[in-house]
Length: 97
Image (cartoon, rainbow, N blue to C red; front, side):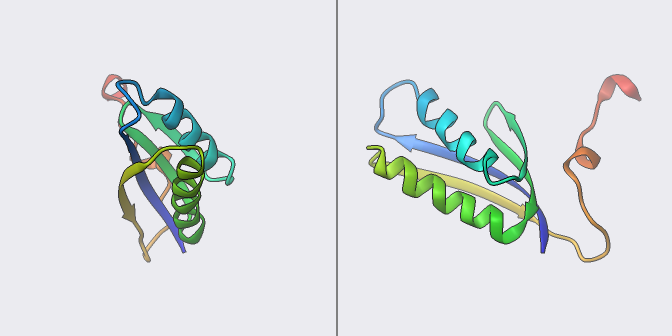
């Protein structure tokens, strides 16, 4: 099943900057082959639902193995049965209208 999702991984207890952990999480997601779009507070993804869920699990396993003690992840998933959704169809450019 294809899905669109927003994944927000929040490392807790790693200090003021979470840049290293966020870059690592995004790299793990990107390497799954999912279509990704990094934004200020998360990553939008497009692809197979099982791959998305596996990617979230891989992020948790990898960051914990790397020393991050606590992670909180917010995950929004959208699926449709009437048509195939794509990230590019969801983007709105106010300058083009």
